Image 1 (cartoon, rainbow, N blue to C red):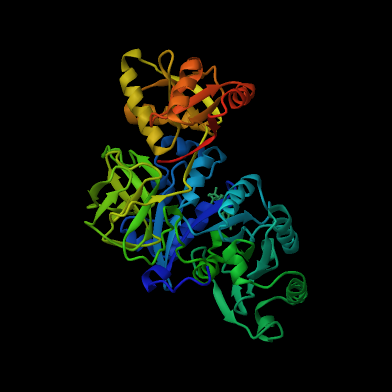
Image 2 (image 1 turned 120 degrees about the vertical axis):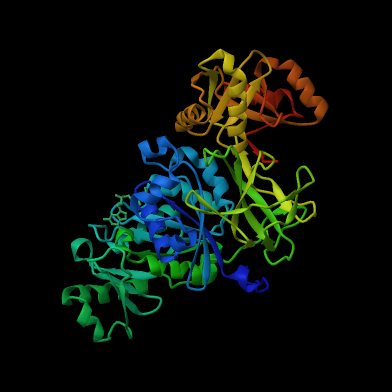
Length: 530
Ligand code: GDP
């Protein structure tokens, strides 16, 4: 990372990141504050990124509103200081882990938000593990410091032990709960004081010459000041100092303390992503890696979303630009079909509002409206045959049969199912024997989401039923062997929405048997998206 050439300034100022957290830790609130400071409100023209207003717009499904969870990922861009931030929103619920995994392939770093009273929670840990698979740099925000929270050393210890990552304090909280007055900024020797009277006001910031500066006593009550000096002394002794390289390698996380709802600590966190967060990184691809500074444009689809706007029956492919300077109207080659596409109406996303993008650079996320040509994992180039790698599709963990409430509407159901398969919202299998479809998902809630979307978007009530199968594996091997295998195991065979052969079963024993009896056949729980 360190010996790469300097990037063109427009690319070097990009910071593309996601927020990972357990539900309720404050991700939405933090996002709102980012947008507030980032002026996205004015940039978007329409987005009023405050409170429920944003929520209403980004949670476009009734079910999301009912449940208060965010099912869809969107990307938001905003400028702050000299940086361009691209925040890719990850679905918060554990049932959408596959979607989240793919979203994390599109970012260069992640912010981990934890609740100061609760510490590292289950969903945070799962998402953290996904980030670790890719060695993503992680910056930590410990939220809700205006409430009774845990001891600062306890929180840091827990992260270090639970997640096996070094933690370095970027700021240190002063007091807690109703006593919380603000933070000492350890990276810049400043005192940040929280303003409780106005939640949207940027905190007051006082330059301090080290911990002996008499100015401290003017702002911090004596008992808290003694404690602060003692704690910082201890922290400096016990905790590692910021090591930028370790941060970029994902082995150290700096932690900021704050209160998103009071807009406190948010600016420091943004500054931190700007100053220490990684710039756009190279993208893995076959037959060669793509570097962001390459002049030719390349990008890849990491998410497809259909029916974002009920008035337009289109799909939007979310594309992370891997290299180059994109301009509206450009012709790009769709690597899978080798067809040229003129990208005439790319969009930048701000919550669920859209804006035409005139230009974009490596690191940016753009939306490309299309009629289904663009699928997850697709690569776009200026002609070179490149294929971005590492965007997997996971075998579903839950399978159910699906039927249209009205048997006359079977064709409509098929269309709906294929659309959701394309979006990556579910796997759809057509069994070789019998009629109907089997739908596979990673988390049970996804069945409900699907049923509700099929009804809303296609006016089609559907029923999910238990399936005789519980596992699905993609079948790989030489063509003739796969055919022979298919013939001999017809009652277990289905095809997915790409036409690939899948083995369905309810017994691990069957899978083991296949591996034993058919040495040329591999049953795989993942497939690279093509
Ligand atoms: P998400 O589920 O992670 O998106 O969390 P939200 O941003 O929706 O926040 C969950 C709840 O915590 C909401 O009721 C917020 O108002 C509240 N909250 C968020 N940040 C803070 C904070 O800094 N202090 C306090 N006391 N509450 C907060």
